[in-house]
Image 1 (tube, rainbow over the protein chains, first blue to last red):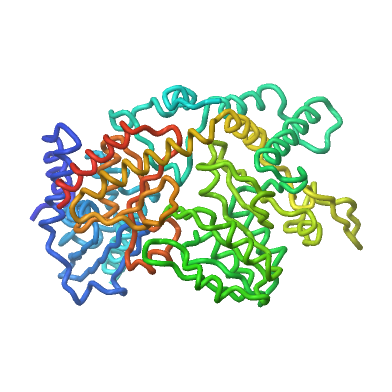
Image 2 (tube, each protein chain N blue to C red):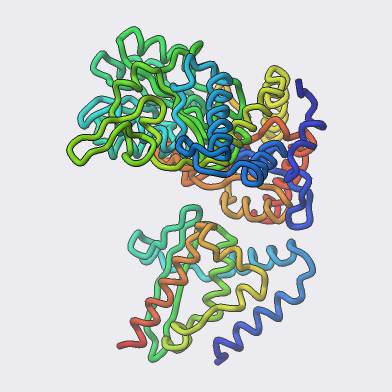
Length: 139
Length: 398
């Protein structure tokens, strides 16, 4: 089982191979297509993280000391970025998840997707992931 | 008069910048237009040569700044052909102008008639004022349903508040007819001109509207400033909107008397440099050949519409017979957010989302659109670049 840091490192290495924006976005889009969809019972208003432009559904569950996330979005690029966040943070110790700063997003040049201006639901989604992690690790 | 897009582009320094390594194609003019050098220089010149607070100081700088600020008001008055300069109330923009009318012209329970294509700024202020809001329906092509308008308009209506041009659909509403029908019943009319002013020269006396709200930043001027035009007799009868400096005649703890128009509605130190630069924007627009500009923008819209319609699975939202340079569209299997993100990688700026018109999105059963909006400095070549880029994005996203 990889640690969060190891997962981040893998993504950074993947991105280092891309020479232009097209390769990079094609990869993100393909990640979005591969993302296992959230189960329909969680694709409801209760699990919706509202963004002004794209919508995100997030579900978290406890597995031992770990926290497991599933998520979905109506926009494929948002979904691709979610896939990366899940790859890094899902099935990891809740205490570690709540501390992680997600610096890899900046390193791979996708920081703009996490700016509040994008209104894509990602910023709120990350806040929610951390809140779940905090709640789970406190139990 | 300026009537060459090639020459006009040279006046806008930002148009020659690069974004993500590509020449910028700026099609987000509906959100905010770019600024000519004259406007940029005006702001710098103001702070370099005349900054001081206005309307009060006896010293030279204050007088110089006051003169420049009031000259700008007169420039706006003349451009819009208002009868008096005090009919131009300087505000932070269209939103504040509408809020002013919602606060000072109507009272709780009054009947206000708006339309289904309004921007949130022409919906929420009326809700805050707790008026009885009636909404005129739209036709499927994005035109106002005038039969519905006529059936909802009555002598009980206090105000008709309708957009001149729709920011999302591009529809140019039949405002002359709306005003004539309303006035027959003694009903006053406010037009939200935010999206009309970048595309056309507006004559408020010819329109005979009672209020006209607009923003400088959509008409090539600075952000944070705009105006409310209002007929003098109406403005005089209205109570002040906000209290503070500049809007008073005399203050005692027992009783305060208010200043005359336009200052009655202009509390506090205004955005002075922006006000003066608004004047510079108006002077610039006075140099534009508007017959040429209208023709040029129509050409861009027609070309873009024809090309975009060829794209499989693409649907234009808003196909009114009378439209300004705005195309909103949705594409089957492609989310507008993804489209906007990829176009940005190619240096192309468009708007995506609900465009602050959520009820309109609900009317068309969509969550958002992609919107390209043109200005007179855009070119046919840019439209071509945009269409090619659009096809590339669709290929990547489908």
